[in-house]
Structures are given as structure tokens and as C-alpha cells.
Length: 471
Image 1 (tube, rainbow, N blue to C red):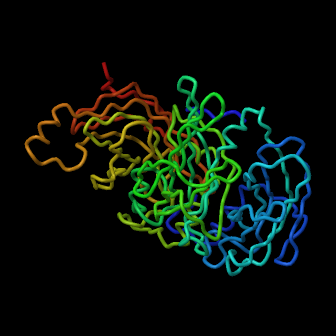
Image 2 (tube, rainbow, N blue to C red):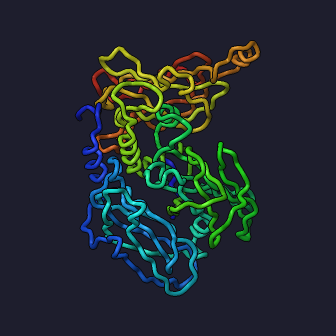
Image 3 (cartoon, one colour):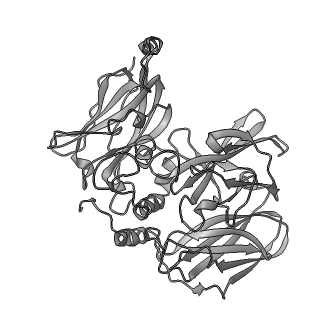
């Protein structure tokens, strides 16, 4: 598999559970289900491995009468056993509609093997009674294939104990990045979780990260030309980078989610384990959130979990309340902040107000450099062609007060390099088309605000170049 390279209605005031149940299934491929599995009727598949390698499982399944948005009906759980031994659990988060879950079984030797898929009554939601299996595909990635190295070092991840039975903060997708320095190869693995129960508040997640999912790197390894691991680290509690000293299972490092903001530990186990198949992705020209755009069903789960946890509010505000995710402009840009923090403001046609990404809170501004996402909360039902102007503003990072801190601000500036996209989620929670924003690199001094987009008064979307270009 080749790494993916970035290239760059009615009002939504309320979002009833029924709408989310229907919309989440609407964009997934519907299919006729071949059979259902209760606790008494597991599904067995015998397969042969011609050459030892990493084994992949593509499980196409549905969970009747479940919905991620509804408490008590969140999902059914399928447990995978290989040759009679527990391998992992698969949470069927897509609900009633057929969906293919791509997971990594791990390393197997050549010969005959059996995979068993069971309905896990204990870990399933109260109202889940069965799983419906449409297809089970098993394939082998052999050592000579390009993807083998990354798959063979991918971590197995145990669930955070306080999420089991709560259907919160579950891992949705794992990806890896590859960097080659000299003769060594570095692989970094990251996971997109549905949310984080601790750490950054929900409104701050939307403002600072452009999402309410949680994205964390969990494991990194450096490999020499012989294929031997020469160094391995993981992101521990409080975002500390620590040396990996835990156990391996057939070459795969074993981790457990250890904090409410989804940092991990190399010690411990829990009742549930996950091994999503990692996909390659190149983030050299985009933010991590681009992966969500390429897998837009993640936005639907994000919205469904917000609804179920009571975090969606019609009134603007901070803390753990946000609007319907369809009521935001999602912006991706790249900038270098030099003692500064960046924010954006949006003006709509026939509306005198400016709507800001930071909601007037300094912490909600973007104070990190590189590619990033942010959002601007807009009135319910706003369409993309109603956006008249967008501006970027540069302010001091933090809250400088002392003489020395103020003195340092003389060199403070925001170097806005590009704006990759600006879009609104459609009625199905899918990223819509982007405004045609094209800017030359800009230097914003402290306190400056520069227009980066101006739409035509006729309603046609047109680009107006920012006037303050960097020399």
C-alpha cells in the first residue's frame, strides 16, 4: 500500500439521535447480510498461510439495533480468536449498516489456521443482541512485501479500563509515518480516538485542533538496515516520551491506554485489546486532521459521541459545550509562530458580526507552528457561499506582563505560509467543498489583522489576494 500524500438545508440548531442514526448509516455501503451471530453461534474461518507473515483481517459486519449516538445501544462487540486464543475485540461502531473493519491479527507461521468471530455479550451495549457478518477476508503480508516492516512493528493496544462498557475514547484508525535518516528507518504510529475524557475541554479542542476526536502518537521505533530495532519510545502519561521496555507479542509491542487523554503505558493489560491495521500517511504538506477528511465517517462518529454525552449546545460558549459540528467553518493552514498566537475571524453577508475561532479566549488561539486545524463557530444553517470575508489575526502568546516579556515581543510575529482549505460539513457530516483561498506567504506583526479571503457581493466565490505579502 502506498502512503497517502496530502493534496492540498435546514438549520443545525439541534441534532436528534434519530438523525444521527440515519445519517451515519446513509453514507456507508449497504449490503445484504449473510448471517447473524449470537453468543451461541460463533463464525469460524479456516485459512492457510503459505509463507509466514503478518495476517490481516477485513471483517464486514453490522450490529442490528445499535447506534453510537444512543446510550445503551452504542455498539456490539465482536471478539476475534485465532487458533483458539484471544486475539482482539472489534467494536462495531457503524451500527446497523454494513461496514468493513480492517484489523491486524499479527504474525503467523505457515500452515492451517482458524479464525473465530464471536459476539461478545459482556462487552456489547445493553440493547445489542447480535452481530451480522457479511464477509470475512484474511490475507498475508509476507516479509518481502514493502508493507511488511511497518505492519510487523505495529503495536497492539489494550483499552483504558475506565472506557470499557462506556463506549468512549475508542481507537478508530491507526496510521504510521516513515522517515529515513541515513541507513536507519523511523516508524511512528498514531491513533485517532473518538474523543478524550480528560485534558483539553471540548470547545478548546474545536478551536485549537479543529475537531473533538483525540489524535495521539503512541509508539515510535528506529530500525537498522538488518531490520533490528535499535531504539523504541512511546508517549507516556503527561505526554512524556519514554523508552519502551514492555513486552512484545510475536514482534509487536504491547501498550495500554493509561490516561484520560489517551497517553499510553508499556505496562499493564485490560479486558479488551485492539489492533487496527495501520495505514501509511505522509503529513509533510498537511495537518493530521487531513486523515479524517480521507475517512469522513470519523466525523459522524465524532458527532454521535458528542450528542450521546450531552456536549452539543445551541448557545455559544466555552468549556465542554460545542455546537452541532455542521455549524463550523473548518480551516487548515500552516504558520510559524514566533512568540505569538494566531486566530481567524469570519464575516457573513448581510451580517454585521465577525465570528472568531478563539471565542475571545487567548488559550483558544493557535500558538504552535506547522500545519494545523481550527474552526469558527457560525450561526446554524450557514452555507459556504454566505461567507463574505475571512481574516487572520496575530496576537501575543500567553499573557506577557513583565518588562522582559514585553521586550521580547519586539521580534514577535506570525508567518502565515498557506491556507490549504476552508470547508463546512454537509448534512451527512461529510467535509464539503473548500473555499478557493490562495495566499502568498504573509508576515503579521503583533496585533495585526489581515484579510485572506473576500467573496464577491454577487454570491460567487472569488479569491481576493491578501495585500500584505511577505518580502
